[in-house]
Length: 376
Ligand SMILES: Cc1ncc(COP(=O)(O)O)c(C=O)c1O
Image (cartoon, rainbow, N blue to C red; front, side):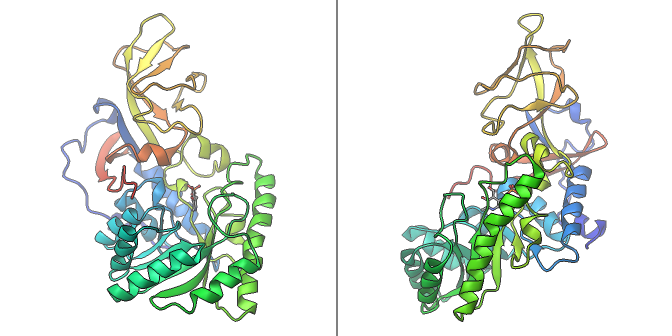
């Protein structure tokens, strides 16, 4: 596993004027990342794959920050980065990360042309589940003179994209291998419908049963003479269950890097490294406090945020655009800084332009979130 030195070389330190400041003095709201805690998360996840055949392909959609992606690679036992969007992959390639999986379908003339161009400067794989997608990608890749790698997406119960497991996947694969400009690598299968099962044993058994459907489909492909070099799937909540199964090659875990309130219930072996520094801006009554962030700064679809060091404070489910109202406020003063723990890191990072990175209460770096807000 790579050590601290290679983690440090995974990015240069910013010259930002805030470096050295006490974090509580920062303007608010500010997205914070505890570097030591995040590094421990990265090291712990990398260590799990040290002696395994399967390897990590960390999911960029969690944080959308190139520096953090590079640190995930430097932490070791990672083959490349997973992206949700083509634009994320382009940004990573711009910064020298060139082994990329877009774990989604890439459709539409403009995007398919961009994909074929990207494949000239990066090894890029995408998910497909229909011949029409394959035909368009093949045509664009041939025109560009590139090769796009493909994974057939298999729906193992989530009910999103993907073919049902079994013969239909083999039929599509047999067609794909006839096309120029594309290379079939194997299968994409994400057990996303089971990631939030709180009971760990249940999550393990249910997600392994789901992933077995993808592994069985892999074996069908292999039996029919189609080589499979990659079955990619899994998450930060299933890395140690489905991620350890024979027949799974790549683990697309994302949230372990930052963590959030919801994920901490699922995988408490990782630390909550990300928080939102906010301030009390109003105390309209004795037990009410209003904080200076709402849904425009904190992703809320996995439930209410928490407030660090105040486990008994209840934040109501509804967050306004720019306000959180706490009805059972402790004796907080106007201007008091607090650390809000969002319920969902991925949508929170998507709302911010930078991580202000800290250690021991002081700012040590600022990392741009290059792909924030990027939908294409
Ligand atoms: C395709 C895919 N793979 C993997 C993941 C797992 O990411 P995380 O570890 O953040 O749960 C997700 C989460 O949305 C996903 O959509």
